[in-house]
Amino acid sequence: MSNRALPAIALMAMLTGLPALAADFTFQVAHANAADEVQDKGLQKMRDLLEEKTDGAATLEIYPSGQLGDEAQSIEGVMLGSLDMSMTSNSLLSNYIEDFRVFDMPFLFPSISALGEKIDANWELMEDTANGSGFQLLGVFSSGIRHLMTSKPVESIEDVAGLKIRTMQNPVHVEAWRAYGANPTPMTYSELYGALQSGVVDGAEAASTGYDGMKFYEVAPDFALVGWLNMTAPVVMQKAAFDALPEDIRTALMEAGQEAAQWQRGYVEAQEKPLLEGFEAEGVTITTPDTEPFREASLPLYESELKTPGQKALLKALTGK
Image (cartoon, rainbow, N blue to C red; front, side, top):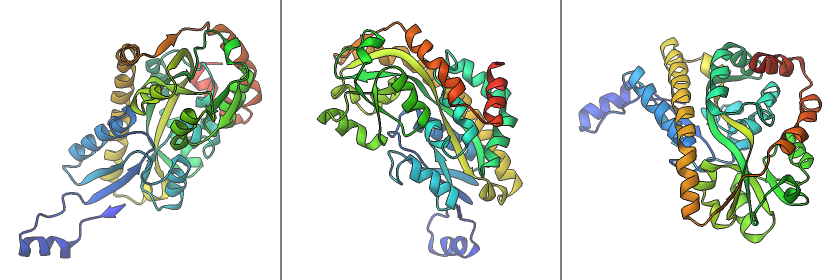
């Protein structure tokens, strides 16, 4: 983070007539999604709230589209202290905060708002879990409900059999799509457009917001509404760096992060219908396969993938099961 409250610079600004730097604390935050995609808008909201709560003493400097590295690199940057803040898919972060793997489970909650209510109700548990892995949790954004984009229509789970489906680099995702009959192919988000275009993969699981933001419909013109995953996108800092901040800045960051997350989740939920209508205008074929076979194939994963006491405790807190 950049502490910009430097008397020498302020004095120079007065003497030269140059504008003084506005913020005492500027936090660099990186993410892999496109600029102005729903995740980026959430960070813009967080920036505005942070500036408001600190009277301009703190702000965010947002780097979208993987400008500072892919998701794994941004998480590692936060861990090492070379990056102030990161917003990534939970599916990458759960490789570092193991108990957050609960949020990678298929068909966990039917809607973004239902999941958001449980996140807010169990905030202290989630924050403690992140702290235990060296992170400070600031907010939990949504990356939408995940569906399936392909190069040919998918009408049922049988149509998935043998397809090379890109997944995130996450073991739960890989096992889920293997259970659905696909040939899961993990790769980074930045490689996906080219892989679809060249036929390296036949499709990928994705939210409608990402499908739109990255214009994947240009290379995968079929979109099957399977709703297999309610994807979260946590915003994190290194805990030691957070703890070193003044108390008022820590408080403002926490409030701005959680308030922005609540706003952003509602915004994402409101985008679904307009986006689907826009896809049809782009010539996308939208199908609605029966999701019950997908749900049934997912059930064994809750036993095989959630093994630690922390994972089981978080699952029970969220679902009562």
